[in-house]
Length: 374
Length: 221
Image (tube, rainbow over all chains, first blue to last red):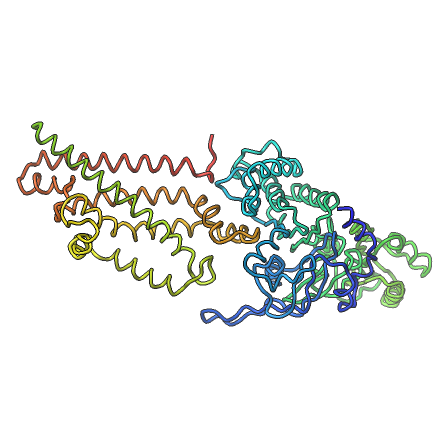
């Protein structure tokens, strides 16, 4: 476990930013996609579908990496390629240094034991108790009854539901079911844990508890976690790196805080909007106009980050002598960095607004002119 | 009712239960694997073999669409081959089994197909073999449905036994037909019907009880 952590610590975070070609080569990867394309052949009159194309990325060993995309973006195909349930049409998928796409039969089944997986709908057997559900992968792997009993007890402790040993899934809450799912996924001591929308069916409070549990598991066991999700809030809470996929392509990837403050793709911006609270206060939104208003203000959104962000309003006032109004703001901690979105009002017509925008872009803030208010 | 007649009823009930019991046992031991195979051999499934699946499907349908009384007569040579004779309760078990096997197979197939596909995917992702998936996931998860299927099959077999009188199979149906109808003894007819109703009711109640007991999708208090 400590080996994983020290390897992780020795990795400069920059090594996970573009250019992409060098990334896949440099990083000590737990999961690596090289030139992967996945096309589902035509079937019963339906045309063939290309689910993924030109997929190149590496997920560092010991990391928690988010893979975010809308439904239909290719997330499920990505998961099934990692756990070997499907083969890429072209390219390689490496897990823990082995090309899983060429394995089959017994070799593939052995490799799959080092890949744990948790699911949106938990996928527990209704006919088995909590303990027996956790035992399932161990039975499949051919463990002895005694070893299974010991391991199951450990796992129930790990996920903090030792008292639910003999309960059936129908007697448990969603959060408890997902804890069993996590214990089951970890049973065979995998080196990577795939989380496929694991919190999408849970309420916000339970989601937080489950994500905390995953963070602990990553920290204590050194298990690499791949979070597949459509929710930026999940990525924000847990992941250091994020890979954004859209229509079967990796459109953006990097450190979470970088992506949050400098989103390059429209799809990324929409994900961010969900987290940072894109919506303006109702009273402001209703007054927003497209044309400049005499004596009014230009409304500009600024994405801010780290130490420089918080002071941007004060600096604008001081250095440009413009009395910028703060209309709405949200500052949050993402990937260990302060990140936020400010909406400011700039008086003095288009000239002043242009001056402000120029100043902000000069200082590498992402900006967006939303409109004008009287 | 005279003691002789009561004895006849008891004897006929015994014959019926014997035929139903043995036929159910044998038909289940063929029908269960066949049903599991039908449920898992479609394109892209665990034991993908779409052609064999299609052939077996036609065979199953053909057997099921043959009226039972015709089946009984049509397979007399085969019955003689298996049972050594074509007459009597023992021989009647052969056509009963042949009729019940595809019926059970279809019921098993339906019960297995009810199991959430996500569970197959889950077990596959753990590296389970197809056989492990069948034994550890599909059958245990489908157990309530399987027990109800078996119950239905036993009830149907009881009804089928009424027709094996045609080959001297005996049993309650035969008794009701010969004494109740042909000798016009309404009392006998009524008695046979009452016994049959009681048997069906018992089988269904016991089947329901066990199906409910193994169903962990419901809350148990």
